[in-house]
Every structure is written in structure tokens, then in C-alpha cells.
Length: 220
Image 1 (cartoon, rainbow, N blue to C red):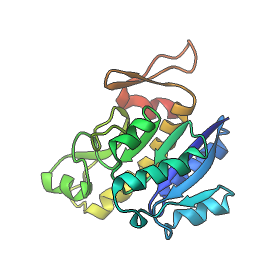
Image 2 (tube, rainbow, N blue to C red; image 1 turned 180 degrees about the horizontal axis):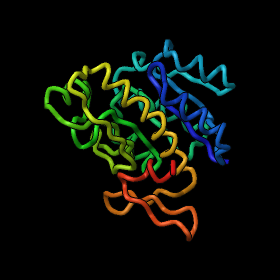
Image 3 (cartoon, one colour; image 1 turned 135 degrees about the horizontal axis):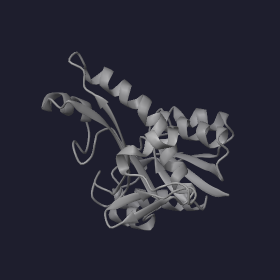
Image 4 (spheres, one colour; image 1 turned 60 degrees about the vertical axis):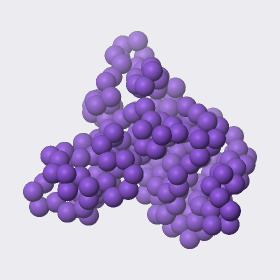
């Protein structure tokens, strides 16, 4: 049984999707803890209602990012995680933190990386006039929002879209894609080849899948 630790800063809707999928699909894993950098994060109440241990490491109580990350690592490591999942965790992590969890630190970003890293992705996508937009699950590296891509989900940009409507459609796909990607990690099916990630087959009768067909293949 592998331990999953999820980090949140707010509502944690992707965390909720992962928790539900882990239980409903009977993963060979458990959600060992949900940790937030904010005591008022709404997602903590959901986790507690599910019987999941929670913790708060308040970033404002530390003098700098390094001290916060060190304290956060100490709390995370109490739960012996096989994977650490960032689910709306709104802190930029130090290289030392990323190195400590190398190859077992996942994030979801609301754009089709490498396009629009950072904040305000939906507004920037609309300003750029793109025809498609989406979300990306990736391994975390020291370069912000530039780690190897595990999966991407794509939606068309409608002529009457605003940032809120675009975000809502993408979030629905995030709730499908992120649990799937975490499950693939738990099952040992993600293989990094240089800066690419390959989804390994479940058995010899399956074929490895390309990055952009991952969700479609799993739902078929």
C-alpha cells in the first residue's frame, strides 16, 4: 500500500477528485495526508470528513521560502509518501524541496504547457487569441511549470468565452485527468525517457500510449 500526500492552498477540488477516485477504484494506495499552507483552506474540512489526517504549515510564520520548505518537508516525510501531489498549492517551491521529492512530485497546471506558465492562464490565453486551451499534469522540476509532461487535456476556446467559463470547462477535465495520472504513477506505469513521459501498458496485450491520447485510451 503506497502513501499519497496531497498539498492544497484552498478548496482543493482536484484533491477531492483524487480522494474519491482512490476509494472508488480501489487503488493500491491510500491518501495518507492532506497538508495546507493555509489554516482556512476549505479542502481541509473535506479531508477531515473523509477520515484523512490533515496538517497546516502556515507559510506566513516563516522568515523565508527556504525555512518554510524545510518545515513542510518535515511534516510530509512523517507520512512516508510514495508521491506528493500538488493540487492547487499556491507556493513556489525551492530547488532543494523539488530535489528531495525528485520523480515523485506531481502538479497540474491550467494551460497547455509550455504555453502560459505561471498565473492568470485563462485570461492570457484569451488575450493571445488561441483556438484551444487546456490543462497539463507534469512532474515538478526546479523550473516553474516546465517539468516533463505526463498528460494534457484540451478544450476548444469558444467565441463568447470569458476566463470564468473557460476555467470551468477545463476544471471538469482536470478532475478526470489528474486522478488518472496519479493512479498511473501508483501503478508504476509512468516512465521518464529524457524529458518525455511514456505510459507503460498494463499487460503485454496493451501498447504504450502517446502523451495526447492518454485520457482517451483509459476511458475507452
